[in-house]
Length: 126
Length: 385
Image (cartoon, rainbow over all chains, first blue to last red; front, side, top):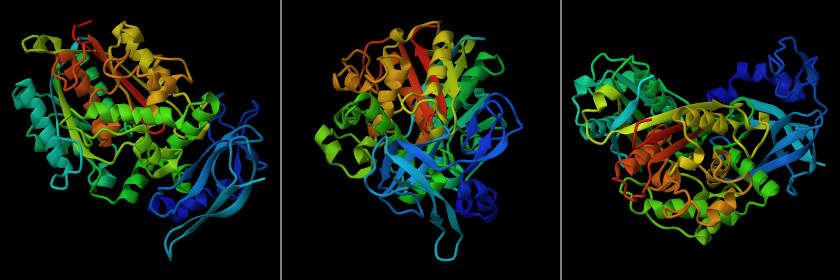
């Protein structure tokens, strides 16, 4: 999957994926993933590193996985402490709506034996 | 804006067509629609084709001229439209605007997808590209997974049950039995749905529409030309809405604002209320989506869609018959063709030649792309506005 494992694409996103960096606006809104325009219309946004703590809003366990992945694994919508909701893989088994999680740095995807290894955030049940 | 009629419809059977290419299927559906309308090819002035990903499924982009070439339509403008699973309705809506505006008098609308030339996991990867590649698909979130997140939230917030979701698939399979174009024509039970293999918890195999090859087509005509033809069905209104590409950026995970925007626009144009709609085709790519659609369109309150289905209100003899020929679940879901196929089934209900005929004056289609980032609503009637 070239779109998923291309070196430039991974490089562009590394700060966001490695350190949970999004954006924040003077209006008080913050965004993860980061944006170039705030809902208020402001284009001058600052980087913001999120603390990585959050709560599960909803979750699923993927059994039939796309090419390059093997199930089962949990994916959840996580409301970060700062407000935005992100999508992330959750490690651990005792998953349910409302549980607290914290972000951890993990391997996300390996493109075969010789391809790029993509790293980023996952979430761990607390 | 002028009145626009549907004067001919046609489709391939939906299923696995190992002997047919995308070109073959578009041609078969297009020929059927031209024959049904009883018009000359040379009278067609523009072509609109919906397809989600011919580039990934068939290695073929640029299918506007491909279709015009295969159908021998000469040098007319021919364009492809893409809105993930709503591509077909988007092509239809654009053709409607084209004729209504006065630019052209006769257009052909096509939708098609050839999904079985790639293996299952590649098909799933391609469908997942309708979500956010950088933040959803790239971590292994599938399309079923996106709807599973909505299903779990709906269950959590409103007490919707697995049995209620299963009842959606049961009803769609029941309606598909009489449909010779349907991929699956066998009845299923709630127990069978609940015992089928897990795809993305809580959604099981029989909650999910299948991977399908197929094409559907229709001919649209201006009022001036259509008046000379038999049994035209009129397009009364059309609406389109968008929402954030990624599910996580939405205000709600159990409500689609794109659907609400599209329905509002279409109903206002038609000058009717939702209660006037007597036949409904909704986008049951996954069982939960049919429940969410019924709520968002206003047939029941938010959170009550599961009970609405379980109580039989969507049956052929119910309050609002939904997906009368099997929907996406039993009928099949060749992504780009689906919106056009939905419209064909409403047109047939209004012409009086449906395989499961009900008595109605007006019908509506709701076609959804991605996890709700695009929604298109089209409304049809026996009589002109």
